[in-house]
Length: 442
Image (cartoon, rainbow, N blue to C red; front, side, top):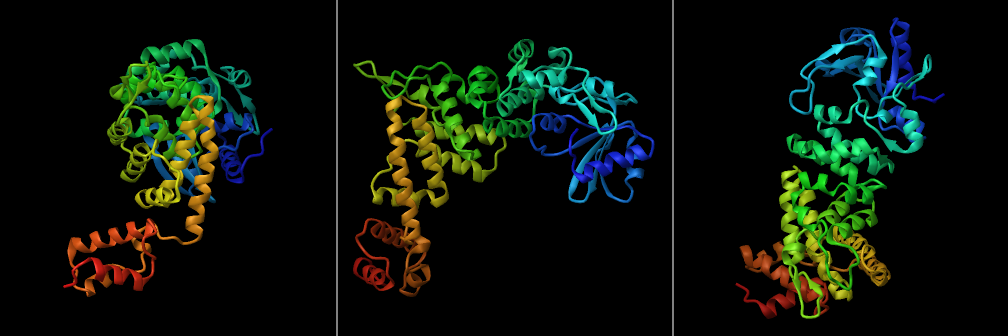
């Protein structure tokens, strides 16, 4: 039924040749049924972990989860996770079972899984094994828990976030009872590690169904991102906006480019608005300094979720400048100099997404931003100077002229500013003459 990669076929055949059952299971089967290319393949078998290691002794094996029955096998360039059929013991930390009991029955193994769409098994020998209507739910584009939804989420709270992540990625609706338990038990996400939430959030925001998920499950997102709580339902009273702050932010995420940093920036770019809100005498809302406060809130949130410093720094800059005017060439060069070329082009994406989530007349800004993008690209193509490192002189030249320490950096930055403003040319002779003219040479 499915054309499987050669390493997967080799693994299934070796297990079968040694007298054991074997199936591909979980997400790879779901993706194959959806005609998507699986990211990885998991195999379930009635062989025990030590038997798996013996069967694959000619290959490299890794005991990545042998306590819970999982052995990784490297065949060619593919790593396969091969797991013994099992039934999970009692969950004691809302995340992991205290123990597992090995089973000889694929049906028991499938019954412990999270959602019906992930509880389908397949082998060339036995075909599809689907005892929880996973194929029907794939056809219906629906996410349904295996068995009792409340129990599934009480066992492992991360499943709450996985459910809405799958909804975003696949564009599936979440079954009514499953959805009700997600809202009811969302507080349990506080017991999940920041690293796991971070990983799921990254996948969620990149999905095609992200807008529906962020708006329908805003209360769930607010459990681990309390910085957005005040934004939910906060009316803006602005001629530029037709949505409340959270709906606008959610739509901006959906309108953003497929860049994780840009989408994270859009998620939090207006989080400071409620605290900055003022209403003028005409009834229009204003949000002075909201970009700076939003950047502070984003930094706090992303640190708590264990994002790396580089990612945090980029997102903070993008939020600080998300409503900054980009028009004249001089202005563009100055902001490029402050942000760097890579982040500057992400800023254009941020402003496009922001404009796309406002009133219809704000869409006119998209063509302006296209022009800004072309100007910026030409600045780069023409090798125009926008950073100290691109100046025709450097610190050593100033050092040789007798300047020291901080004054070297000060002079170079002043020269860069003058070059960007077109006051002087970026040539070594001109720059050195300017230094002699303006600054005392020791």
